[in-house]
Length: 100
Image 1 (spheres, rainbow, N blue to C red):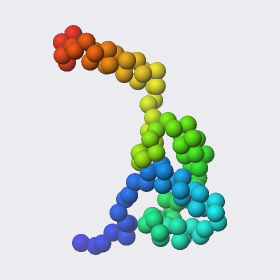
Image 2 (image 1 turned 30 degrees about the horizontal axis):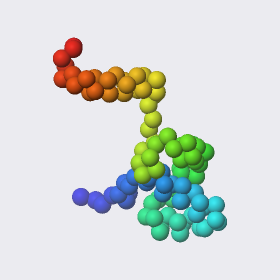
Image 3 (image 1 turned 180 degrees about the horizontal axis):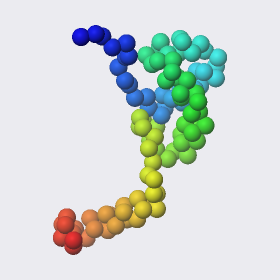
Image 4 (image 1 turned 180 degrees about the vertical axis):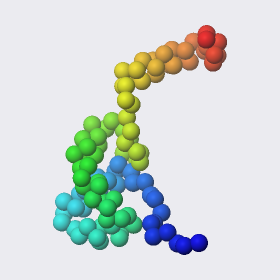
């Protein structure tokens, strides 16, 4: 079987992405940054391209900085209502599926 030219996929945390952006701002060579971290040049380019979104999410602290994916709820108001309902049901110790 032929060996794949692609490396192992690794997920990068939000904190690491911010550190990579700081290294790029300090005028370090992109190829050296990629070798030190062990990522592809295209991955670093994608992080640089999405700089505004990454810094915005990091500054707003919408998600934990150790998370690797920056997914948020599509319907935040629905998620909040569901969380309130769940905490309410858990608080009065209703068993699952009892009121369905």
